[in-house]
Length: 356
Ligand code: CUA
Image (cartoon, rainbow, N blue to C red; front, side, top):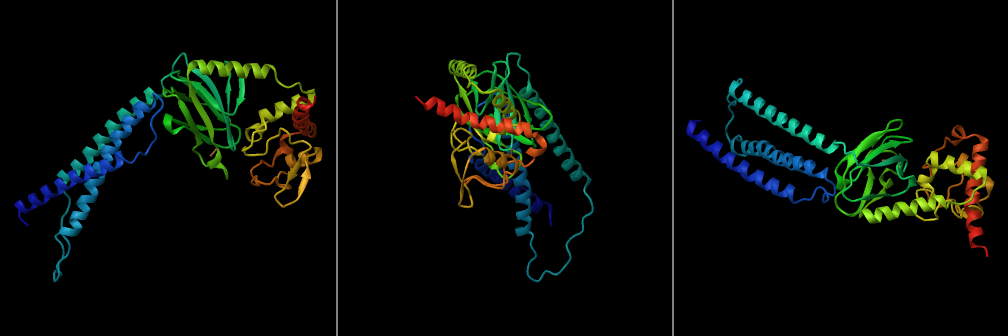
């Protein structure tokens, strides 16, 4: 093969690589892989991602076009039974394909470190939110504002947040795609995540670590609102906590146990449907439909047995095997009585409010 023929092949392949890069880039950039950004952290991350995509489009084309071109143009012709030419090493080529990727990786490492710095930078006026993950729910405390156990996260727009994330059972992962950043929730550790939401709206918090059968359903809402709306919400929460229900001492101990052990992540006490487990409000004394077709009155015995042997009598519509089965190790007999008392009080409370 003579030299001018080789150069012609090289020119044709180079043009094909350029065309392919442009087409792959066009496809990737228009395939909306991520939702619209809603935090300042998204800026450097999206910028870095855009450059990655450009390099990926070029590398993909470089490899695939050369390969396909060789397969087609240098294929074995009919009647050609000879061996291919033998090549041994090409120092110049080997240096080029080592040095160029090395420089590329180092450049990306530099910009990656710079973005990481920007994304995790501390902000002194940050609002603190404690995030607790539990199979299969999230709850939020605002330690500076005295708000505990909120099932949704409400935050003011354009204010930096510092989330202190932990888990009370297995490893989960806090992720809001619009904010881009994410962080593992690890039992026994508190891990920090900094976010400054900059677009008002409602977003979905997802769990991004496979954590059990209902991993996909481990969702919560984050609402980014005007500062005035946030202040109103805080005032409302604080007032509601102050005017909380009057509970007996046993019921108060039961309430504390259920909050500290994450029971209320799955069983709400507001009566709202759609929880992971049945709501506790109005449960006591009600007729519970069981998955096996029967029914049972939710008396003390039923509630106690549901805590101790949760898979014995499954409430219809709720999947078996979700409720932990270690409560006899976790709670004493007296503590379980306190929890039953609390669940009873939730319904007595309601009836007392309805009664004339
Ligand atoms: Cu929690 Cu997946």
